[in-house]
Image (cartoon, rainbow, N blue to C red; front, top):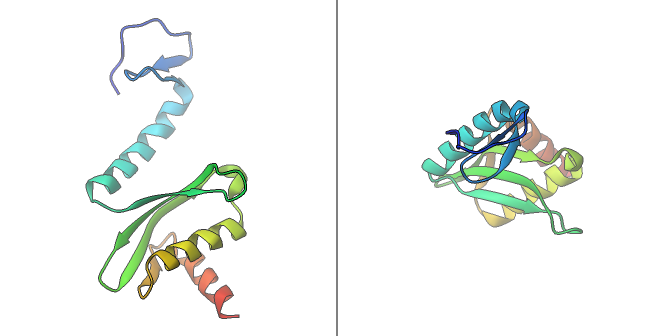
Length: 122
């Protein structure tokens, strides 16, 4: 992010698009931006998940589609929406979106998918 030539209050930084961001959050935003832009460069589908009640975006999921599988590369919920119910609803929606393909995960996401599969067996 390059610096813009404008005056911004101490402790804040203005990016060139006009958004003012607290300096302490910049370090957190850069790594996320790099991973998301990498997913976009790899042409992985990126899904935004909305809350059915409020119609607000509460999650993002990045998947890789193979011939016989769908790999959940990354996903994240807003802090207030990180519940098993929401995670399972997202996984069910992904499975419904790709019928006939196995939903798989990375080393980080597979344990949640395994729990979801076991829950759906009962």
